[in-house]
Length: 331
Image (tube, rainbow, N blue to C red):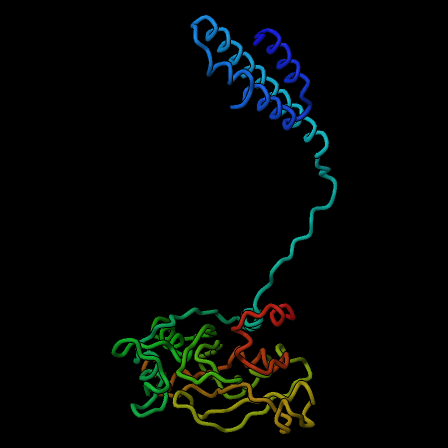
């Protein structure tokens, strides 16, 4: 084998390679396992020939390494030149998320009462039976205290069935006047169907001060109904019963779809139930250390899912928890 001729031929092929693929082909041809140089190295018999051939191999490997570095550098420069970014071009549009419908309704309700001077209270979702039942004047045999209705965790520790317990805790910690609304998740042992869920959201309001009357309660709920359902909404009050209020009133808003004429949404009554309300029972005031001869108050409770269903015609409460983007994107 003529080592000099092989070296000249190989270096010419290496320097003439225009791409990394061509360079790799030259590497295989001149340094591969079946190349002439590799075969000669296997058959070498004297030290001098071995030194010459190894020197040739090292020279070719160095030439390939240098040519590869040059080709990669040229490729990088070309890509940098061709892939320039025009920073003046508008960015690609990204799809942004938005608040869940229940969160939207919650914030609307919060805004209404912040505008009236109320304080927003976040209570605990795990409560004891004193704050959730006893202090709210619920007798031992009340249906709400049954394990068939309430999720008991340990002894007298339960998942709250309503956010009213927050009102008791606030009144225990503050002297009147008290104007608060408490919003959040609540839990009950309800069988899941189109209108019931074991997890739902409530807003409950409380106002305690001197000379609070039913007129204050009616005016507050009328203001809330108009803010949530429109300025032309009418509110109707009916007598009802709740252990923690006396007298107790049920509140209904004129149907936003038929305006009182009667339709399937309002079950042909012209009215849609909003929730319960009333003047705070004197026993509840005594339980927190207030003197019912000095102060009075009103309280009310509404379901946020119910408000959302009534406003937007949502037929099934389960849709709020299914995370179906086709539904959620509508709001």
